[in-house]
Amino acid sequence: MNNLIYSVKEIFTTYLDENGSSCFNIPEYQRGYKWTKEDARALLNDLKKFKDANKDKNSFYCLQNITIVPNKNNEFDVVDGQQRLTTLYILLAYLKSVGIEELKELDFKNKLKYSIRDTTRDLLSKTVTTKDFWAEIKLEESKNRDEYYIREVSLEIKNWFEGGDSDGKWNLLDATETILNRLKLIVNKIDGKKEEETIFANINGGKVPLDGADLVRAVLMTRSAKEKFTESNSDKKIHEFRMRMGMELDEINRWWSAKDVKSYFQQFLPNTTEKDENFNQKEFHINLLYKLFYEIYKDKKEVNKFSFKFFEYGTQFGANPEKAYYDMYQKILSLHLTLKDWYQHQQLYHLLGYLFFNFKKEISINAIWKKWETTATKETFIEELKNLIEEQLLKINRANEFNNEEGDEKQEKEVLLKQITDIHFNWYDNGLILKLLTLMDVIDFSNSKTDKLNPSYFGVNDEDKEHIMCQNPQSEKESISRSKEVVEAYLDSLFKDRKKDSKDMAKYEELKKLLPPEGLVSSEIQGKIEEQLHVYCLNSIGNIVLLNKTVNRSYKNAPYNEKVARITADFFNTDCIRPFTASVFLQKDQKGTKTINPNWQWGINEIRENAKKISEKISKFLGWEM
Image 1 (cartoon, rainbow, N blue to C red):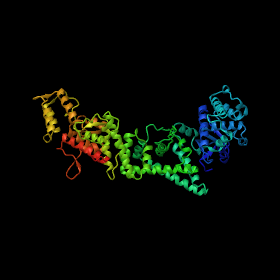
Image 2 (cartoon, rainbow, N blue to C red):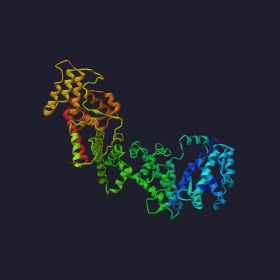
Image 3 (tube, one colour):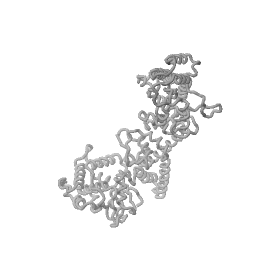
Image 4 (cartoon, rainbow, N blue to C red):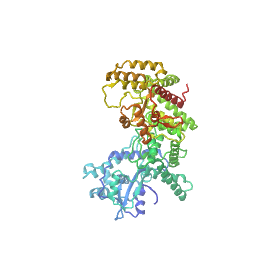
């Protein structure tokens, strides 16, 4: 057999015969049976639900995988999946005990052997398969935990069928047909060259040979090809299609393995997404694509956790219910190609990155996908994304103004732009500043033809808000008092263009009057000066940048020129300085190249110009032409 997936009937009959094996053996190193009645009930409920929802006889319910290794006694040792096999064995025993015709000829009695302990083996082969056992199941006769769980699950199966569920009893003939032929397992047969205990240890240590990515791959490759070539029934075409699928899935997995791709799209998933441990995203990178597929196409009417169950039945997207797996594969391919296109498109990459890194609680990949499908062109989609950014920024600003009700949109935009250009507005304690400063990098890079913003810069990542012109004129860690000359030099530098603005001149004179005639300036006076400067200009958005926390705290309160030199060196030699922060400190010479001007000083005029530039960039980017 070249198949990967086998029905329960095949597992206990033809699979063993065609592979020259007499039975499945549960080896000594395995743990005992431990399925509970809740586990058994969940399986039966799922099977009935599957049967009711899937009238197509070709569809199947996959109970995931078993891992087996041939031993020297012509048996298959079960190194993973003994719980599933044992439960299926008990289920078959019950159906045979009630006289199902199809099971009369099915000889499975000796197809499962327990080497763990003799009493468990005898219970399964000599007791569970008798009518007397099912007539009255006695939990108190259990000699060990294995036996107790086997009896408990048996009793649950009997009560489930004979008591019926909320929808009424399940017809036993329908149940038998589903369990025998449509309930399937993926068989992972290992050549046996490795020691079984090593394989078992790897599986139970979290290194499962078949990850969720393997299970999805097996289902897609097994079912899609058959559905595509149902009419022709050509084995050659099916084989060729599977080969092509294998290469496509391998190529997709390679693309998703890129570091920046992973860190970028990881933010598209909500924090509440169920992280199924059987879908190892670090080892199988394609699992990130599968999780995004789930978020887009999951049934909103049901509270489904992300798991293999979402994929095992296929998803019908077309008119033909018999093409569910082929349709799902085509949708997965389409999603991959679309997300790849988004990633490679300059504007889409930056707009989507900004939205998901900053507002993932307010938006979802499902909502974005719906916008994508309902917009006619990329240009229209781009405008929709900008509208979302605008909506989120104004919403935060309304909350900051203690008014969550939407007002006149034009007026709200004007208010925000005025706050940005007003150097007296306190942005340092305003939560919106983080969104605006990260937006500066997005705006610059989305207009670039080639450069892409590092994913870590879409949001605030271990960064401090830092005043460009520091609030303290000295670099010493502590200083109780400073000389009048030092404080005057600081004020002269900050107000270097004071003659151009009467308000600046007035504030400069006001602060100068606070200084003593000579000698030292007390910490109290310095505090008063700093307090007034914060209100006047230092807390303007034009005087604030984001700096890596470790880097920022190493600068301490360094004077402006020293800070420029340090930031410039870090920008060109490390990745710890974000582009917008660097651009504030790097000045352009006459040739347009970025360089350091040692005689250039940061003052109130620069703060005002920087704030104006931020306002103009945001206005132009979002189309707020006032």
